[in-house]
Length: 338
Image (cartoon, rainbow, N blue to C red; front, top):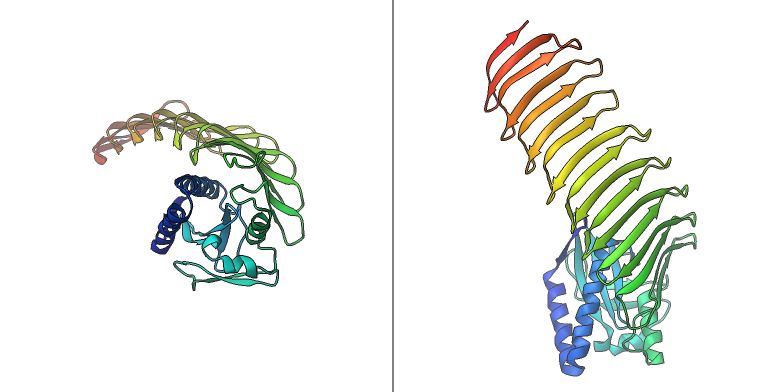
C-alpha cells in the first residue's frame, strides 16, 4: 500500500509563499502550472519513494520541480514527509554561485533538519540542471531525462519524458546494482503501468496505479517462474477474487473481496496438508467453517458475528465423532467427549 503524505507546517508555509510570489511576479497560469508540477511530483514520490536523489543528510531526498524548484522530503516508515520547498527564482544569488564543490542553500526545513542542506560534489542533479535551463532560457520546460546512479557508476533510476512541457507522460526504469533491469513503468496522466523482474531475469510482478492507488489486475510470480498471487483492486480497495499459490504450484489461499472486505467462502491450504474453509460477510466471520487435518480428521462448526455459535463437532477420518461442543456467543455451554 502506498504511503501517506504529510507536510510539515514550515513546508506548507513555504509552498503558500511560493504561490504568492508566482502570482505577484509572474502570472496565474505560471502559478497553476507550478501547482500541477508539485502534484505530479508528489504522486511519483508516493509510488517510488527512492526515485529521486538522496541529499546525503538525515535521510532527505530532493525532487526537482521545474528548473528553479526543489522539493525536500523524508521517507518514514508510514509516511512521506514533505520537509521543505526551495525556489531558486526568489534567490538568484544561488544560481550565480552554483559550483561543483558544494553550495549551502538555506531552506525552510522541518523536523530533524537544521535548516541547511549541503549540495555536495556528487552532481546535485536538480541544481545543475536548473543552471543549464536558466542559461539556455528554457525557463518553463521540464527535464527530458532524470538519471541516478549507484556508487559503482551503474544506472539505478532513469526517468524519461517523451515531450518537453508534458510531465504527465514519462517512462521509468529501475536497475539492480548489477545493471540488470528491475522495474519498467509507463505513465500516462494519472495512470502508471508497471512491470518488475527478479535479478535472475524472471518476471516478478505486473500491476498498475491510478491516482496514486493500485488499480486493476495484479499478478506476482516466484523467482522460479511459478505463479504466486493474482488479485484485483479498485483504486486501492481489493475487489474480486484473490488466489495464492506456494512456490511448488500447490494452492495456498482463495478468497473473494468487495470494497476491500472479505465476503463469502475462503479456502486455505497449509504446507503440511491442513485445509481450512471459513465464511465471511463484510470482513466478519459469519456462517459455516470446516477444518481438515493432514490425516483426514475434521472439525465443523459455525460463527455468528465472529463468535463460535451452535454445535461444533470433531471427527476422525472415518467420520466417527470424537467430541462435540455447544457454543453461545463464543462461550462453551456444554461439551461431550466420546
